[in-house]
Amino acid sequence: MSLTFTKSSSVAQKVSGSLALIFSIISLGVIATWFQLHDVGALTDDPALHQGGLNWRNNIFNWHPILMTAGFILSFVWALLSFRLFPFDQKVNKFIHSFFHCASVVCWSLGLFAD
Image (cartoon, rainbow, N blue to C red; front, top):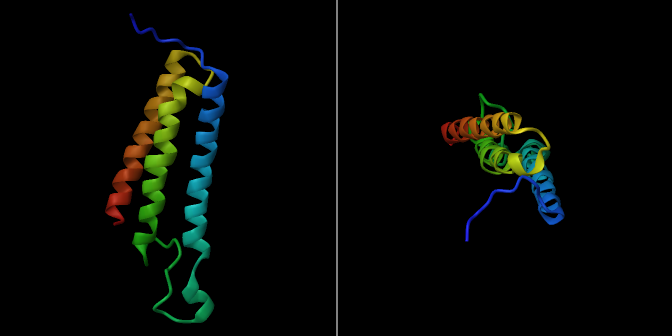
């Protein structure tokens, strides 16, 4: 029994991979919207409830979940699925794969710095 690599993906793999890409974008959007718009202190004028929005200078911690989500979910999923879903040749897919892996490392590093 030998393992062979096939370039073609089945319909189920393409559908599930496309859904993974779509849900990774949605998850990042939900978290970014949550930290930007869900500012209870702005509605009640209570400074103890003010989260600070997405201001890097005043409240750097709010960037931590966004950057970690961008690194672990968005960039990492795109890097893992680049060979299965993108219809380019191997060199272009390898570049896309490397680019998204590097982007995930940058997001992880900035996310840990923001912690």
